[in-house]
Length: 163
Image (cartoon, rainbow, N blue to C red; front, side, top):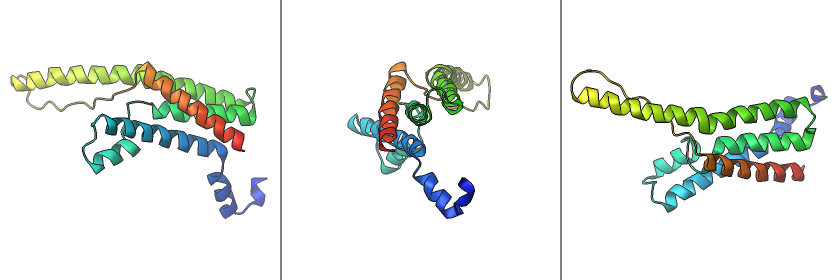
């Protein structure tokens, strides 16, 4: 069926795909809400920092990872059925990402923070000379993940109903 469309037509169909659109809009929506919250609380001090929060920075309320995978799962479930192989794949992907969002990534960030404290203290006492700080990944609290899932559910449901 896809063979009867030109490359241009296939690309246009790709850009209008409700599953893709729900994922993109849930991610952008979560990042926008995250940036708005940081602006309200005075945690953004420059345009560059605002752009970084909008498009790159992870962590914070709500979880954009959770919003994206939830909208993916919801949209596929509604469009292809809960019995479809594609939905089962999306559900497994959802579970892995959600577990990682507030489990593994949060724990890794906490460990990196503690290791940086120890490394910097040892460097200050000149016990080690060339300690290089580890990247501290924020991860998410359960509430941030839950809010991201709620946002993703609503966006996925909306795009599924638009067909």
